[in-house]
Length: 120
Image (tube, rainbow, N blue to C red; front, side, top):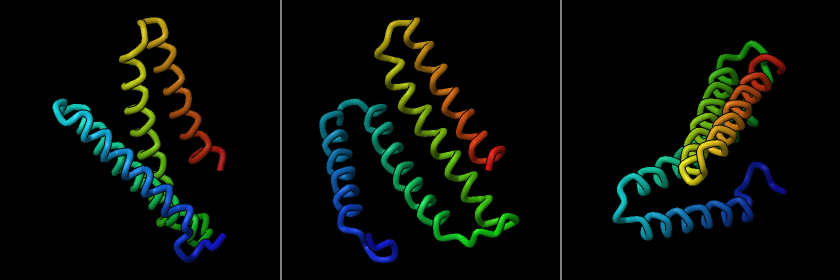
């Protein structure tokens, strides 16, 4: 696969994400909170993919400030998305399962922090 040029499969994935998000906004146009959820997660995903691409292309300087800032951005966006999706899922579950969903989200967030900043 071509890493520098536009990969057609990536384009198809982004087109499907955009189409899916537009349909979700259309279906929930009466509910402002649902529209805000879809819009915020859509742009967070776009930012996450963009930051990951920049991180992959950044020079592997261990003391480089650019890679550090990109790590922080990737972890922050991942944390935001985990919290947003956990919130949506937890609202659909009964109380005991709700707590399990939030515990799993906290584990993923803490594990991501450890993997990005402590272990690497």
